[in-house]
Length: 392
Image (tube, one colour):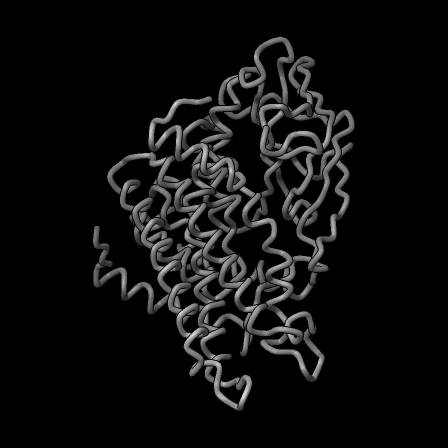
């Protein structure tokens, strides 16, 4: 299948690139550190600037503040944002809980939360994984007991990205422990400022703070914050993951890293004073990575194409997520191989290459093949849903 953007799409791409040049700091190479106050302030400014142009939720229907942009236009937006490592693209609100509320939410929930997301005024986070429930998410234990017109929530979530910055969380909780595990789960919307919510930072091995553990001690959640039917949260929660898995972000990040490596190879010399770009082994490996990125990119476009036909391609979304994460990892791995002993040097060292960011990106990206469903989970979904293979 050949994918071609319309002239209007290409014009939008140029407008978006100009916007990014004008609004990102001069010389910006990213990625932003969400623990850094300056970077977080930039993220908020970018999010609101995108909202003012109608781009933050342009893929949403017009009645919810969007532009009814095509999935192809939206994937172009996500790809450019990822390539420039631009902050402000709130995937938790715009891509995940927003569309879910449109489908499963009450009119009151839509009226309250969708305008906030569209304006870029509220930050969301996702409460799924727990200390004892990661890939086997249906084993989650965080409980929500109904008392009158409220749910009382107790338990813990872990690896919660941006919990320390978030205003709201959409979370899966166990509301019925007496039925098969997939059938006793519900989705709740929780105000992160509620009494009993505690956010504990998790500093990852790259030295940055984006992950957190969140504990809930008798946290009261109004019953109107239940999304979908009681005990039907598994279906609601999985629809969130399908939106998350169909992103092109991994390819955009990998392409930017590949371009930086090309520039490095053209500038740096290896043994014998020969440029890395003139080494046949280097050229061959870079060509292989280029092809791998292109293949992954085409899969993300295929996801958007299916969505444009009104379909929900869960198996292709899993293929897209798998291909993108692996391609990005391979680029970063080869970058560290080329950098050698210079790779671990951090920004500020006179000998650091590429501002010392490749090693940090690779360390952080260890989570890339885990979040939104591990590589092994994606392979199972491709086998079961795409190839119709039996479960054994």
